[in-house]
Length: 395
Image 1 (cartoon, rainbow, N blue to C red):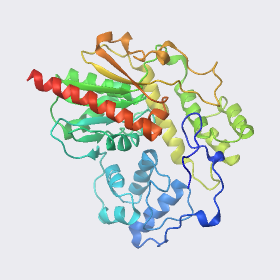
Image 2: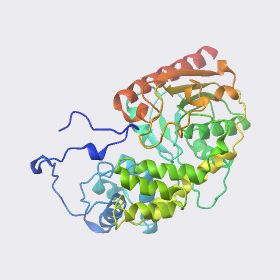
Image 3: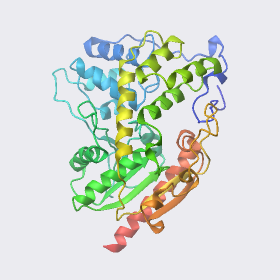
Image 4: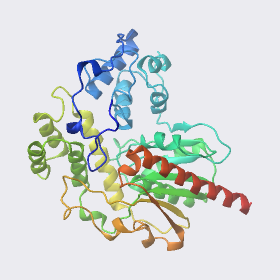
């Protein structure tokens, strides 16, 4: 056992710093082969996406290394085989045999579902928006520590397959349809982390245009950069790919870094596979598709003209700068937004409309380090409680 996992400067697991365990230190769960067609098909999908040799019927998708981005790929591959279930189904039943038992044998119409994180409460729901990666896994650990009396939902990313040049307004309009299936009328309440918060703002814009009320907006370190077009979406995504391999040795990383500015996302991933950063037998198609969707989302972000809306926002900003051991300080983003508690939102809203609250850690560790996440959850709960009290007094 380790007292704590070694982390990189960005708060990610530093695999190179992990000690090699003795043979008797391995936790060995009894393997039981999948039963039936559905378990067998799911096990094969999991093994391919997670890069593991075999998956047993008692294995847990998330304990094997799964996360919400891979969950989307699981849904897509399963649907190709006629197995239809929701992301919520996978989050609620992550053990292979449990998930398989909930999948109907007969084909069902597919749907993009809002994920129910907390099903009950007396106050209006709180909707969390996925990050700029399309990732909503951060919501589950955060909500577990929140003291709120309301249902909580994680919103889905819409499919980008049929809309390569979709605007942020169009994405917001699609998400609003899903929101209204859960809550037909306002007041609406949202929270968003990183660039996903800008999508939350666009959703608020859409709802206000429909004469609805948005009573609460929480931004978790959401930066509004003045010059969004200074870096292309493709370069942003290539940087994301490089961050994924941050724990590689310096020589291999430099090989990837030199290639990053000269090749496509697919070629960069192929290069990573050739030098051993990705298992050689892994099919890269879904990885490429995931990063292409991220690039499409960032194109929509860059073209979005952020309006001034008649709402207040709660900005929970990280008090530490985000430092990468791979990115030299002179190339890191150091604009005024990075050091301002308001993170640039005072350019479109009055200073009295932006309530800035400091949060421990940097942009990554404020969420990835459990102690920081607990403090953030409590701050968010207090802000939501004050908003509820204000609404009650105004009635």
